[in-house]
Image (cartoon, rainbow, N blue to C red; front, side):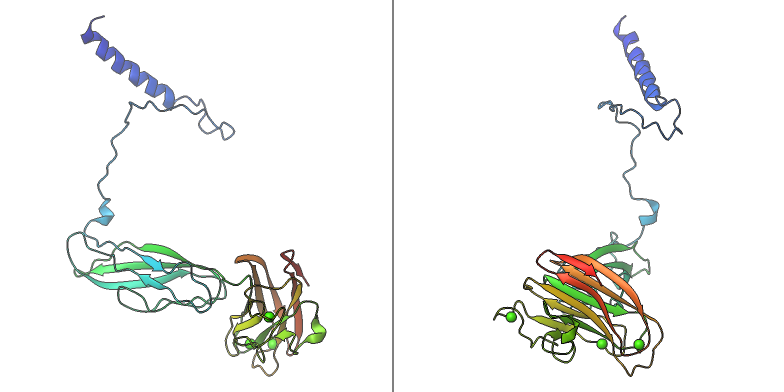
Length: 296
Ligand SMILES: [Ca+2]
Ligand SMILES: [Ca+2]
Ligand SMILES: [Ca+2]
C-alpha cells in the first residue's frame, strides 16, 4: 500500500470508529443500561464549536452584577448591590440600572432600592439567601440579558432565634428563657423579651457580655421578624416561647414560624398556627452543650 492509498484508508477507518461509538449502545432508550465509557480520541476535535455570541446578545449591553460585603450578618449589616461594571460592547452609555430581588427567605419582605449603578443599603433581617437580578439599558433603549447574584445573610451569633408570622395586626412576642429556668420565670430577668432585652440589658451566665441575650428586633404592627441572639451561649437548656400579645386587631389563626440557628447554621424550624389572644406557646428547648433542639 503506497502513501496515496494509505491516507484515504485511515480516513475511512476513522469514520468507522466514529460510527461505532455512536451506535455502541444497542438500545439507547434502555434506562437500565448505563452504557460504557468510551474514551474520546484526543485527535478527534469533532464538530467545530461556534464561539461567536448567540444572536440574542447582538446589540445588547452587558450587565455585570456583584454584591458586597457578602456574606452579611443580620440584622444590621448592610450590603450594596453593584452594577457599575456593566458596559456596552458598542461603546454606548448605560442609561438605566434595574435591580430586582428575585428571591429571599420566607418572612423577609425586602426589595432593592436605588436607580443608579449601585443600590441603596440593603439590610437583611432574616438569615438565608437573597438573589438579586440586574438588567441594564443602553442609550439606544436596548436591555441587557439579566445578571443574577446571591447574597448570604449568616448569623454571627452562635445562638440565633428568629420569628415571623403570617398576618399583620396580631402582635407576636418572642421570649427566650435562661438555662434551667423554664416557663415559671416568664417576664422576669431570666426571660429575654421586648420589655427588658432590646439591645441587651440582662446579664446571664458569667460576668461578661458574650453570654448575654439580646433582642435585636421587636415588631408590633407587622409580621416580624423579631430575633433574640446570644454571641457565645453558656451551656444549658434554653426555652423558646411565643406570646400572642393581647389587644391586637387580628385574632384568627396566624401561622408563626421560628427558625433556630446554632453556630451560624439552621438547626431547627417550625411553623404553628396560633389563634386567639394572650396565649403562651412553647416551641422548643435548645441544649447548647450538645447542639440539640427539642420540639415542645
Ligand atoms: Ca412583637
Ligand atoms: Ca454574662
Ligand atoms: Ca392573636
